Amino acid sequence: MTGNQFKGHEVSCCIKYFIFGFNILFWLLGMALVGIALWAWSEKGVLSNISSITDLGGLDPVWLFMVVGGVMFILGFAGCIGALRENTFLLKFFSVFLGIIFFLELTTGVLAFVFKDWIKDQLNLFINNNIRAYRDDIDLQNLIDFTQEYWECCGAFGADDWNLNIYFNCTDGNPSREKCGVPFSCCTKDPAEDVINTQCGYDIRAKPDAEQKDYINVKGCVPQFEKWLQDNLTLVAGIFIGVALLQIFGICLAQNLVSDIEAVRASCFFT
Figure (cartoon, rainbow, N blue to C red):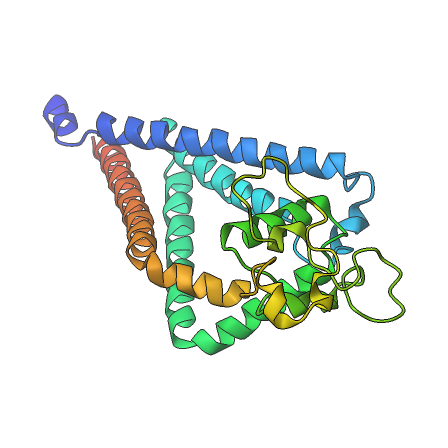
C-alpha cells in the first residue's frame, strides 16, 4: 500500500536536470561577467578608491557587466541549486525573481511606447552627459566611439553637441588641439584606408556646415537609433518575444518542479 502511494507522486528527473543544466550555464556566465567587471575596475584603480565609482559624470560601461552578471549569477544560483537539492524556497525565489524581471521588461516596453517623447528627451540628456565625460574614462570613450561608428552618427542630435565637452568646444579660451573638432568616430570612413586617422575630426566644426558633411557624419545618434529601430523592428520584436517566452517557460518549469516536490513530501508525510 505504501509503495502504491509513492508511485503516484514522483519528481520529474527531466524537468529537474533541465533546470539544473540550463541555470548552471547562467551561473557560470554571470560569474564570468562579474569577474570581468571587477578586473576592469581593478585596472582602472577603482577597487583601491571605491569613491571614484561615482566620480564619472557619465555612464561607466563596467556597471553593465556588473549588474547583468550579478542578476545572472543570482538567478543561476537559485535555479541550479534549487533544482539539484530540490529546495522549494530557492525554486520559488527563482520564479518570483524571474517574474519580477519579466514584469519590469513589460512595463518598460509599454512606458517607452506611451512616453516616446519623454524617452527621447532622456536619451538626449543621457548621451550629452556621456559626451561631457568622454575623456574621463577609457571604457566610456570606447563605448561612445563604437556607437558613433556603428550608427554613423555624431553627438545626440548633431556634431555641435560636442561643444559640451571641454576638449572639443569652440570657445576662445579652449587651449586643446581638439578645439572645434569631433572624435575620429564621427568621421566618414574611406574603405581604402587601412589605418584609422585619429586626427580626422580636428577643426572640422570650424568649417561651414555644407563642407562638414564631406568629412563627418552630421546626423545625431538619437535619430539614427530611431531609424535603426524602425528598420529592424521585426528583429527587435522577435528578440523581446523570444526572451519573454524563455522567461515564462522557466517560471512554468520551476513551478512544476515545486509542485512535484511538495506532492512527494505530502505523500511521505501521510504514509
